[in-house]
Length: 82
Image 1 (cartoon, rainbow, N blue to C red):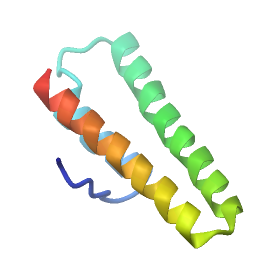
Image 2: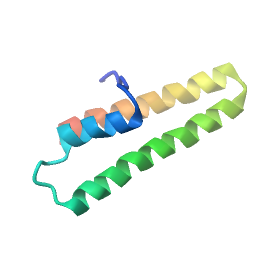
Image 3: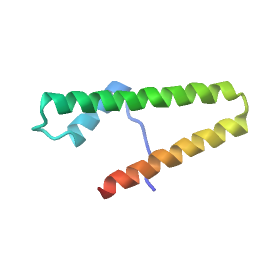
Image 4: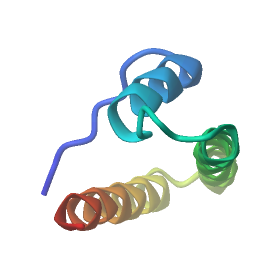
């Protein structure tokens, strides 16, 4: 399992992701769709974090954060295997 570490703002993370993952010869449609998907993921996580903040139960909050962490780490492992 890989440990996830955020570096910089979401914009900075997008630029890093674009540089490392999006093919250099990608057309504008592919770049735009990847950009939209990247930010949609960020919005999805923000919605999750808002829901966690409303739980007002530290144990439930910790369990939900741990579940998200596991899911994202599993995704990273799966993506590396592609």
